[in-house]
Image (cartoon, rainbow, N blue to C red):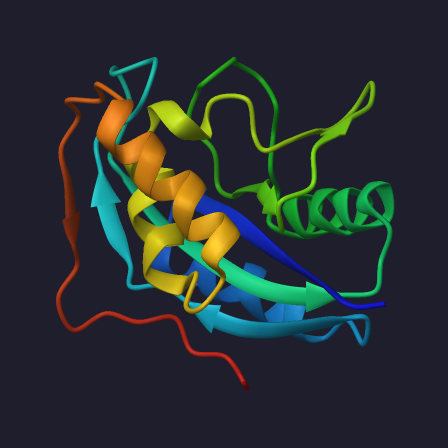
Length: 168
């Protein structure tokens, strides 16, 4: 069974756009993943640790037959291919991929919590996911509710004329 999943992908080290494009390309090469939509590119101020460069963020809607832990393993391999280093909590990174929503499922394991436990607090996650959720009423409802309730005052802006391409 194929399920719809939403990812948040961000980069603030090196060529941010190229890092996002590489991540989407690597996801697209996995036969068990079909990318449905990629959001606009958003530039955002860092969250948590402000003493670092601004991020480029996107959301990706995909369908997959992979189990949640297997998809998480794929995301970690994409991060490794992008030379992700986990040196500092909320620190700078070449690439960061997070599972935000898995349809309306709740997942709680030692390594994965879905919906993402802080998604509801972050404009840089919610606004791009809202853009790619399409006709997914359950996810749109969660995003709309979170946007009405959250207090994130960090700035976020679409990067005009910049897109991440995918074969979809």
